Image (cartoon, rainbow, N blue to C red; front, top):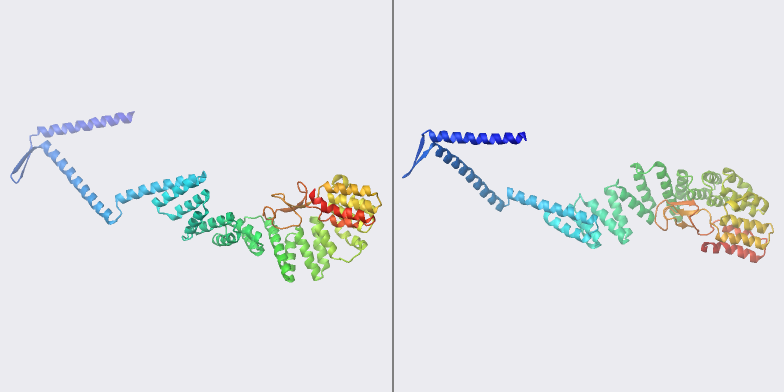
Length: 476
């Protein structure tokens, strides 16, 4: 309020001063006589001041008009002027408005509108590194892969946008199912930006699907060096890849390299059952039964598994059941309380026809964990002890509808696989298979089926019925 009053007072003071000055000039009696050719002008003091001010204004206006004229000429000649700057600002404003509206349209899933806005932005901005990206994404949202691919290819011509173009083309090829081309693009993108996590994950997935285990190990190593993977996770996954690489070398017949790769994988992750089994096979081929036994016992201490027991049996394939029972004491002693150890003991006793000891080893598993494998062993024990066929059939009937026990199950999609693999057959996830009880059902007895032919004391019809049980099991 005070500021307003001060402004009003100053205004009136200025008006008063001007009025006093004009009155003084009018009363001074001075005059100005101007003669131009035959024209004579007599001006009073006040009139002279007004004419002088008008003349100054006219001169200022003339210079401004001359400047505007020269600017217009420069505009016509293509020079940068205030007019061109104004038009440039106007075009930029309209272009960025179209760019923003296109981005919003993409976010809301309106692909057609985004394409129109991208064309408008290109017309005003003339910046392909921005507008071509918007056009490509708009075409993707609109479901037009041909235009999207053309836009992404245009981005390859600029060093600043080459990575974005490659990444966009890779995404299009993955959507189209062209994994071979997508893999090549992912490799190029990784070469440009090796620290980009999305590219790393995509490349790793494509390499594992293709079976390029060596390339996958390189990518995994890059992730570990950049601190993107915990050390223990990297060690395990690198062991997985080394294991698959070793399997490939085994298939090619280069056993020396395979042995080294398999043994390295087992050392990196002693709880990785397939790696330990392959390492034991490598030692067996070298004739080194001592080291084969050592790695299998160490793995059994960490994670008792039927495959480890099978590999342990393969060390001495020609031994008698009694000799095998004695040799397996080393393995059993490594983890005597585990369920898998008790099942292994029961199987060994059944093979040795010591059915009383087999029943004792099995204990109360038929009540606490009555899965198909436990019930199949009980059927063998019952047959060996001379029980009625009805008792044997009762155990086998229960085995048909019982849980299959631990199996290789994907932690992501819960797909069940008969054999371990680094990549899930169903969802393609890497390192998600674990040996555990699946939520439902299973793929049948992978290690209990071998036991049923041991029921040799009864009629052949009973043997045939027992052997048919695991074949019918997967259907339950």
